[in-house]
Each structure stands twice: as structure tokens, then as C-alpha cells.
Image (cartoon, rainbow, N blue to C red; front, side, top):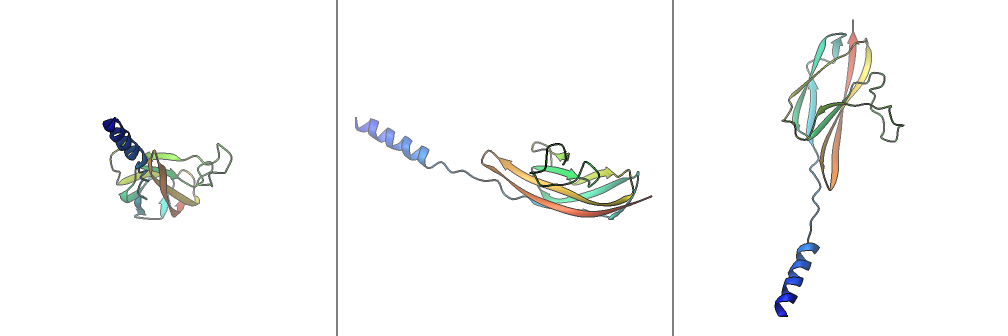
Length: 128
């Protein structure tokens, strides 16, 4: 009987001490060699740090970064990196139309206990 009580006590302590660990906030930075790009040409954004998931919003129509409360179908991200992908150091993108854009990179670390994210903004000018 004593052994049963000890086992029950140990199980209770084990279950009661479950610790939920939130993921770390991504250490993520974006830079570009230029903020003025030529329309129709590939442009590079360089990454520093680490993040599990990276999404890109170019700022073009249909690709704006808007609050998550916006109606579905408005803020369409371009997936850049997934959790299982290897570390990414550079992302290239081609703007088709000249204009001024606010591009956003959203970096996330996620686990079953929650998500942490950082948002980085770059002002981009596209010329002919």
C-alpha cells in the first residue's frame, strides 16, 4: 500500500510540474544593398539572425501588411522560409510596377505553447 501511495505521489508531482516554454523572440534583421530598385529586375534582401518562419509582404496591391483583423483575402503574404527549412541568408524579389512601397518581413518562432514574432519594415522605391 505504501508503494502505491509513493507512486501516486510521484505521478502527481510529475504532472503538476509540467512547464510550458514559450519560443524565443526571433533575432532577425533585414537589409538591402539599395532601397531604390529597377522595375522588372531581381532585387535582394539580406537576412541576419535566425527565425523559424519568415513571410514577406511586398507592399504591392494585394500584398500589403495589414492587421490580422482585416477581412480574409486582403493581406496575402509570400512564404519565404518554413520551420523545417534551413537557415536563409538572402531573399530575392522582382517588383513589376514603378512606385513607392512599404515592404514588410514578418519573422516568427512557434511552438505548441505559443508564437513570438517581429516585424521589419523597409521603404522601397521602384523606378523604370
